[in-house]
Image 1 (cartoon, one colour):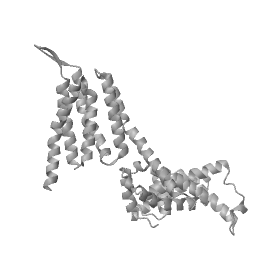
Image 2 (image 1 turned 180 degrees about the horizontal axis):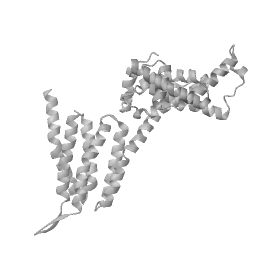
Image 3 (image 1 turned 30 degrees about the vertical axis):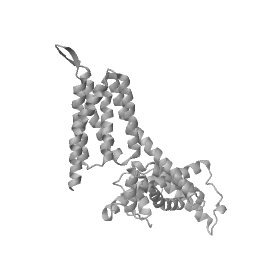
Image 4 (image 1 turned 45 degrees about the horizontal axis):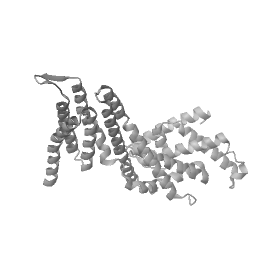
Length: 175
Length: 183
């Protein structure tokens, strides 16, 4: 990803302590990955920009609450994923996402449509998980090395995936 | 991504960061307002207690919002100031009578409380090897918290608190200064 999590962790800890001198650097380190996550989840540049801006707003508003024992990037990613989920739900409610299939473009618009629905469903299911599980899955998705590694990370990921599957089954009734 | 004005976004987010800190700071000083309200109910001069309580809350909120050393000084400062506050409020309820008449125990209680508060701030400051801003912030908050109760017989109680605090804190402060020079 190009972002050294240890550097971000240290900078976030300093920002949580009130060191405003690192604000711009933290912003720079977070903006790219957060924006990319939103683009990959929402598949729409305008929505992704809105969600990423709102996510940055929330992340830095809560920077003082940042727990120095946890890695910063998965924490920020989980907040951004939550923001994407909120935006998707809002759009679903307003039926703004109901674009005709042929407007999706590309060679296989049906596939794109299915993909978009699956992404929205995955974001919704992700929102029903605990914050810890969300962070683990988002970190796994982005191949972010958390503070734990090896067997611990694998076990945590497996447990989070099991809970994700259960939530998926409960919400949509299929695997 | 080009369509996003990142400088403007950063400015907006910075504002959100400051507001988030302010909200957290106001929540953090809420217990001080409760303490001030309780102290005002017990104190003989509730208005002084209320004013010192508000000053303590405002100073505490500013320190929590600012962060760094002053933020770390809030809890030890207020905790140390509770000693003279409680002693003064208890002393308000009693007096000593001699051949020349009766006198309040407020000033001795404030002085004794000040010594204990000074020692406590010095102990924490030395243990953490804290900087000057920690000492300054913790001392201010301890004195303001103590003053909520020590205004019981006017400013003499607060003077007693200040002298007691200096007696308690100065040796620790000197020890730190000399240790720094030696190293």
